[in-house]
Image (cartoon, rainbow, N blue to C red; front, side, top):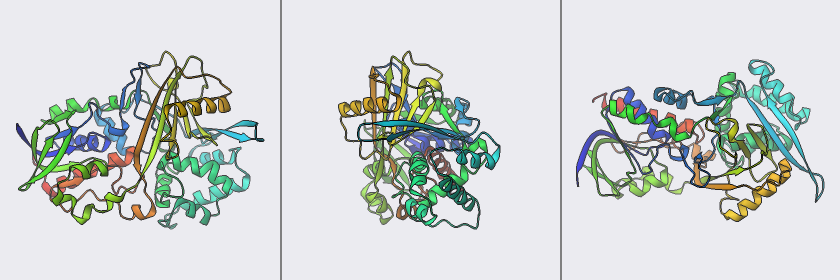
Length: 453
């Protein structure tokens, strides 16, 4: 088989790999990128749904204005403008409240930080939330004030222990903290590290209105990365889609990469922008048996369930809403933010930390959706089409113990670097974490190897 050689290779075309590729282009360093799928983006990608004819994402993503590295990457790709951006943070909530065994009512309330500018707007937004008592609101605000002080040290303990330590009420935890943690960390408050929550709040909620606002993609996620091909060509680099690397071998001071179809490639250096479980499968024994890699062998992951569905009649008009006392955490009205409108009404229901739902059958999920639509929207509107996306290993469960031992981009193997949302970025496993990790891996490569074309 033919063998090709490059200075550096990237395995994985998700956000971490794309970020690394863009950074290499910035420094005029040629590279090869290998992606097993026919599209870029990994878990943040899009594809054409055959039944509906619509382009859908591999799960609906909440995009934060605080994703500065991610947006910087898109700016270099010329696609950063294709978002619908909130002027300031607004989050609608729908709560299903049981009155008795057979009856319930729906309460609607809004976290609206736009009434006043700056931090005052966020305080007023909390004070106006109808779901919380005044005491709970004041306790949340008091904790917010503490978190903004550099002198306030957050220990690496679970979020639930931290919140109880800070006198947060059960009401505040249920109606405010749990939805926030599920949206930003994709993990339960009993598992996740309080350090991550504190960092997310400091970077987004406590920052300016632009950073704290949410954004909604107007196009399919993979379309944001389409320009990477032209950028790579100008950089004398190559993208190999539908090219699955199944084995890595050490070849002197270099690495030999073998693809599923038998093609062989050689690289002086390597950035593995893969999830841990995928990385372990392709490492040679002499590398994987290094104690450095032991920790990732026991990693646990959180699942995400996304259900896209299409109806003939409109269900609700808001762009999105958090759902309280529901099996699903969020509902998105896709026609409200996409450039290409569906000929039907198009929605997505998503659940983070979805271990309790991920093994349900399509029929069971369909029945559950029908029940929830009737409960929350008083609609007996059965979907015309449905696409269920199950990400069983969507994000790493970053417990306090795992946070203390997350992997650096550097490995003990000379010229071998890691990238991914699971590495030590001091952020939860998000798109922003992936983008930062890819860029850091390249900066480390340049520092250790020089900017040699």
